Structure formats: C-alpha cells, structure tokens
Length: 250
Image (tube, rainbow, N blue to C red):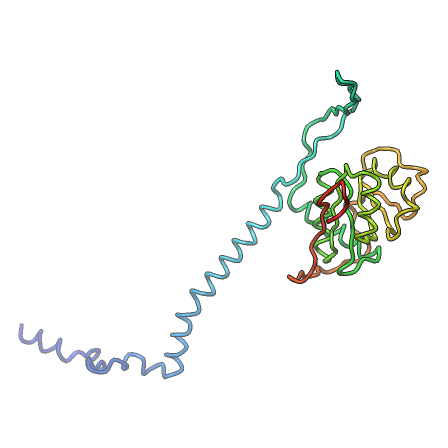
C-alpha cells in the first residue's frame, strides 16, 4: 500500500505539472500558439454561423423565386350587355389563372428597366402609366424604380381634358398604356407636348394606323446590353399620382 502511494506521488507526468503554475500547460506552444488558439476559438463559431446563415438565405431566395407571385386570368371573350336603364356594360369571360413567379417578374422588371434606358431615360426623368391595374402595370412600375425614373400614375377613366392637362403638367416623355387607350392618345396627340414614346400592353387587339409615332408593343425579352440597378435616395421623387380626375393633377 505504501509502495503504491509512493510510486503515485513520484509519477513523471505529475512532476512536469506545477499545480501553482496555470500557464505551464501552454509553455510548450509558446505565446503565439496560445493567441492563435484563442483567436480560432473565437472566430470559428462566427465563421460557421455566417456561412450557414448565408447559405440558408441563398436557398430561401432561390426557393421564393420559384413561388407564384402574379396571376392573370386569360381573356376568352367579351360582350356588351345592356342594363335595364339603357346603359351598356362590357362583360368579360375569363379562363383560369396563368401565374408568373417572383423570379420571372424580377427578370421582366429588369428587362423593362433596361429598355427604358435604351429609349433615353435617365435618372429623374418621368414615365406615365395610363392603364387599368394588371400584372404588366406592376412590372412596369418596378422597372421604373430600378432606374430611378419617376412614375406618373394616371387613372384609366380620366377624361380627355384632364388627361391632356396631366400629361403636359407632369412632362412625361414615355407613356405606358393599354391598347384601348391608343385611340384616345391619337385624338389628343396634337395637344400633348412632351411624349416621345408610347409603350402599350399586348392584348391581341388591333392597333394599326393610329398615327402615333414612337409606338411599340410590350416586350418581355431582354433589351440589348445590361444596365446596373440605380440606387434610390430619400431626396428622389418616387411617383406622382392623380389626385382628382375632375380638376386634373395634384
């Protein structure tokens, strides 16, 4: 028993360790080794967290890009119905929803923004949207934002006089509209002074021989060349809107 206790107290391993010296365990590695180990202990968890977090965000972004975003019901036919008081209403027959994903909408907004730049738009210029609410309306809206182009929204039900006033007052150089608005634009073309381009949505309606120069139909294909996103600033004007369809623009 005594021999066993004696051999334990004189163990070569214990002789190398001084219980009163807390730094003796790191002497073999030197000061740089201790600092490196401490740095690794601190940095590795942070690096691992940001790597996994960034990877998770990337996977979420890719996944959300495939989710349905904007849905449009295809027009099958339309007819005019006469009410009991003699007024006529347009009745639409619509099919099932056709969906665009977040990724598709983003790409199309980017393509539209590039097209506006190719038409000569610069930061701070103005484009008007004269149309009913629809998927293309929102895509055009976001496309303008990507290049810091101020959007002027105009009610599709606006009267002719108020429309002329709105367009001239806001000095838009490009007007985005429904095909059914082209006839109205042709009638007032001599009264509007700043519009250089008209972009209309595709609905399969006849739009020939309207006498409007600079008219082009809506295209989803990418414009030639790529244009970087233009960062917005709080001092930039985002949009103008029609405040009163009777008195004009506010």
